Image 1: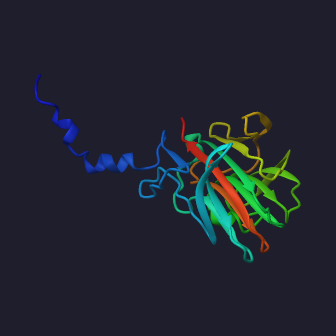
Image 2: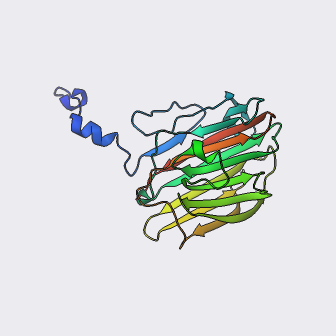
Image 3: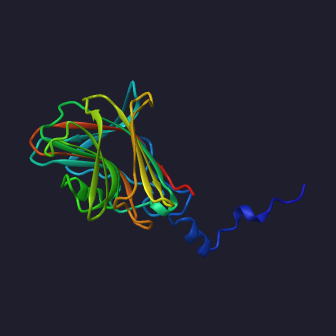
Length: 240
């Protein structure tokens, strides 16, 4: 046999490397208990922890990374990224996450799960002036059930899922950004992947085609209780 091809040891041209490390269709944002964020290339949404402690673990629902919001006034925590925004509507992103709020669920508290241009700012409000497509559960807003929420950063539109929050009961959310229509399709499912509620937003202000969005699982205590959030996975794929 002849000598092996030199292509295997030849570095890629700098311009090609630059293209490959940009956020393009087929790339994705990912939060998993065993992964490390690669913020320099934008492929992964790194875990951001704010005023919290955390650890990996597992239960009957799978492996998870736990965030513990420590006792203290107005504590918050985010799984996601505040600096890398791998998803845009023009890339027809599909995003999926599984999460669980366990232990002493603080009253009042606010949770956001989904895609947003600024996950950190999302925690501060029930009606954030932030581009997003996400699920809200907010006791200050009087949410007895999960709410689907979309916004172009100015106008927010809500849809009541009718699905009640149950402590220590995992939920799965699926979000699809559809560029051609345009539309945002959202679903909430149980831990067995059974559909509990689905809805498609059309004809209302939505994330623009080129708005950069990051995946997030975020929670905020508005009192001095301690709360755990388990993140089993959160991943999005840009798919044309």
